[in-house]
Length: 304
Image (cartoon, one colour):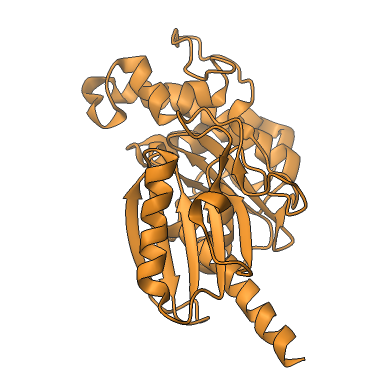
């Protein structure tokens, strides 16, 4: 039995699978992200109810961050300086109380999503992939040469400084920087700008799409310039805003201009920026893939 856990700012998705076959439909559950004690307790209960007498062979965790992903660090598996209320300096592994000896892999939620999409979703067959999420937070996971990059740390692109939209007077919501990328485009930022959630914008939807796409296009340009992925998968709750993906594609092409003449992004229908193929399950599928890899490695080692 293997398990995958994706912890997000608003929800957790857990999955268990009896088989190493990625085509098998795993048993899943959704859990609201509340306090660490309550949330991790519900995750433990789900895992215990499915593990049975044989227990777990491996566990993959894809968590919101910032996150310590270095296995050699004394704080490996800790959520560190997160703006998520109550979660700063939370030891995920201690809270989950996994049995001793069970192999555990820990990556960020967006790295997990990138792994899931690269193996089973919109990035199948692509060696160099970026997964960008704009939702409760903003982040990016990078796959280079088929492997997550980097290994002992992770990007925090949500805190990038961006050029302000000329018609946006919102000061930003980030507790660290105010108007960084996350402070201007995340779900809480959209709600703060208009005084109501993004799903209820009504007549202000068009203005919000214009403002958010202006910022998100800058993020896509930064990722394109720095890591040069073959494809960018654009996910997260905010990404589902009607018209946003199209506006991001158009603004990205205009922003980059002739600097990358002939690049796929210059043709806005090229498929350079796409929606997740796995929908809301990208991250948990990536976590399962990590668990599957560890379980298979353990089996090979026992047979050698």
